[in-house]
Length: 320
Length: 314
Ligand SMILES: Nc1ncnc2c1ncn2[C@@H]1O[C@H](COP(=O)(O)OP(=O)(O)OP(=O)(O)O)[C@@H](O)[C@H]1O
Ligand SMILES: Nc1ncnc2c1ncn2[C@@H]1O[C@H](COP(=O)(O)OP(=O)(O)O)[C@@H](O)[C@H]1O
Ligand code: SF4
Ligand SMILES: [Mg+2]
Ligand SMILES: [Mg+2]
Image 1 (cartoon, rainbow over the protein chains, first blue to last red):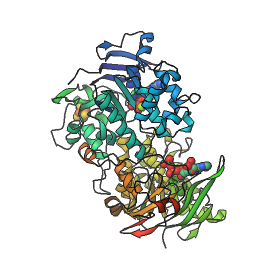
Image 2: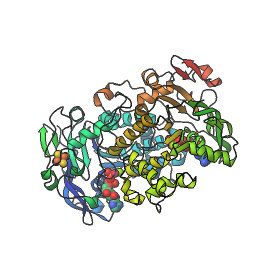
Image 3: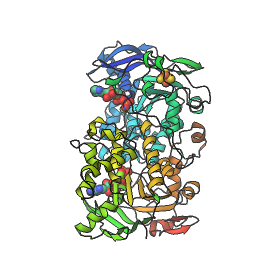
Image 4: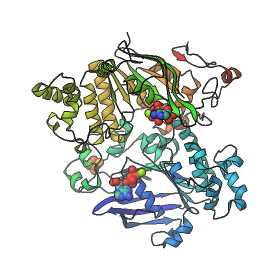
């Protein structure tokens, strides 16, 4: 694999006494789409905010390192970070309308990423709008966000995030607020741009369908930790962590027998205040024993590039 | 007699700039006894508006809605109240559908108490039975909603909706607000309740895989109208309307081998506004098959194969 564009090592984030994110690590290569997948509240967005160094005041990074190429961002002063955001490291969000400035034209907003007046970079902005599939870019460039649909606003966000050719794009649930037909357009666009521009993409989602569609690799998070990580095809074909396996079996598919019993994960996701010792999935795991409830499992490789954190992993093809 | 019979239903809302929002604009469909009918389509196509009309929360602007033969359009309050006992609704967000200051036992028993059907010990027994039926512990009847998780709260909402043994259960996105890992619990419960009670159900969702999992027949809506209605297997195996086909092709399957082998037929463009719907076929601005007639004439619903389709070229 080529040298990583982004490396997150052993990241820990605290909210008061609660450890929201505990020892999360992964890396993304140029041109690669890496999915960070997990249920609501598992720590995907705060991980993204930590990478951007845009954490809310109440959340503290208590450990770990973030590297952009060879550069360590962890100790960089905020002024230096400002020159990196948007240029070498960009982010897009779930609600594109909320992330755009309602009072400024979309052309001006995209130009701002280049820190140039629109008049000077108009041609470049128009080409970028064209590249993200905005029809009639010459007219759209002077419009305001409210004149655009949700799907178009997300295209504008992507244009704005990618115009400076950053090495890394973090996309936090970029299609969750969109309809499926629009989602399909945006996912195709992200995949194409990652390949063409060699952008490393961290795609945050809770939707295993989205992962299956465009991710090269994925990391499954549960309650602030990585449960399983590896190549997409390998994990979908033979998940080794009980949580991943149950999650995949619990999703209705277009191919299974209608009204059949879906696999169920009993109970619910613990809140950070409820995190105890041992494996955080233990309270819901059918394989849990005394060791799981007391000793935290560490990530270990089960195949090249495929690692899980579980004391009692599934065999290849084994059901939970 | 069908449990639910909707004919040429129109629900229009006052628009901001004069033109009314034609949220529902000529929908006809029925739900037979014991049948679960799915209603799918993208955001804003009118699913919730149809659902709200069938339980009397919204009045039709035109057309007819009959629950167990009783007409809701223009009905007086007594009739509506009687119909509401027969048609119950489960909403998307279990948090806002429960009163935070009422114990869950009181919430589940309220419809029975208010209508004078049960009180005292008989009521407590009915509530215990209902809680048990949705997989909750009857001894938790004295607890408050905040003491339960999202999935458990949706069970409470379902128990309450079942209290009057409705003929029709209307579910509007019942699992969309839930964690992925608890959705299966609720879907299994709904399938089980259908089998045990044999009630009819209108099941609204934007998630096609979920609809396929729980429904017997499916209606696809686009911009306030029905595009296609068919039995589940026919609809998913041989969709006739180009919009149904596009919708199916857009669902990302949670299987990289299947998903990546799928032909890419991205649908161009965006959904037009229901305040200013396109003339002719409402789908013509995005349709890959569009012909001259589509821009001019509104396609009527007609039988094609095992489907009923509103498309000139199907
Ligand atoms: N009270 C209202 N006043 C004005 N317009 C409304 C009102 N309720 C709904 N609409 C409009 O009617 C159309 C249909 O809305 P509806 O909520 O039925 O859609 P839906 O299919 O349920 O969408 P979703 O998938 O987003 O829930 C939309 O354009 C919506 O903005
Ligand atoms: N600004 C904040 N203040 C306090 N807690 C927060 C804040 N943002 C996130 N959290 C908490 O951090 C945890 C992880 O949240 P988040 O990263 O948003 O999850 P995800 O994106 O995976 O849904 C949750 O328990 C959440 O409540
Ligand atoms: S470590 Fe134990 S509790 Fe955790 S997932 Fe593995 S078997 Fe289950
Ligand atoms: Mg998030
Ligand atoms: Mg709705």
